[in-house]
Length: 402
Image (cartoon, rainbow, N blue to C red; front, top):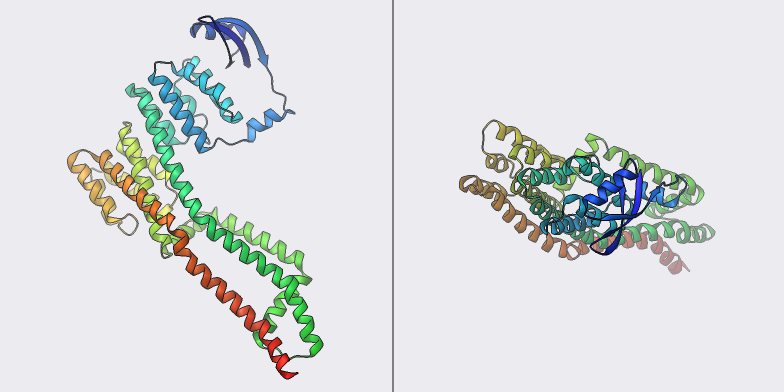
């Protein structure tokens, strides 16, 4: 049950919430914090309340996790207990789902559980990378450093995603605009021109007849067309959820010019930073490779990391796996891993690789609009040109005849 309380400590009044079995446990919790209870009230959320469903279905964003890790690191580094640091974070956060999660995590810790064990109960919010680094920090007594590393890791990952999404906004807008204008042309403009051609009895070229046929179908069967689009999108979504669909998508991305190189560098940066962060936190190399593989989105890169884990368990060098797969990981990755293995500074070398490729990705995404713009202009030119020749051409022919 969740309780809210008002308490006094060092002459100051403060409030808090705690998950407890009864009021006596709330009193024990507050005394452990060095305070004394003023009032206690139990909170029961109705399933009909907005706050109940808001907390149930809201998401914990990457930004919320970054702030949480940074704040916990600062408070624990300053000497606060993990329980008290979680209580402060719970009061500070505005995300209802995260607030409930922190409440349960703090309750588990107060009952003698570990921080990483409590977080492990929420795999959809805290991935294995987060939990593994927390576990390593707890076991080594450097939880504040582990939380700092987590915050840095999440920040870099968040920034990388933002840059990629930002680069895709411009072409996405153009493509959506082309589709929208094309639909309006086929359902509004073409029928008008078609009626004119029929009234004049003009003999139309094959290209014009094809456009008119498509337009007539879209006008007469608009609902069928819209349902077909929905079914097509749903079918593609379902296909991409299958192993075959994911493998096909990943292969296509790797083969597309410009995009393929960007995908390889993004995965190299993500692999290097995640792997380095885990090693730096004290996670063993085989577990670090396994967790890194779960973070990487491209299935072909995951295969390389899976192979790397198997080879390392057999006593083989990690660098040999990356060098053997230079079609997926850039040559620098294998070379730097080899240097790290020879010098015993693998984590540092991987961090340098991550910094380098994150810089490369940042530069390429910044120039993405410039690179894609000519292709979009060619596509628009071909589309407009074809429509002009097919539909405007017959009009000029008719005007010459008169």
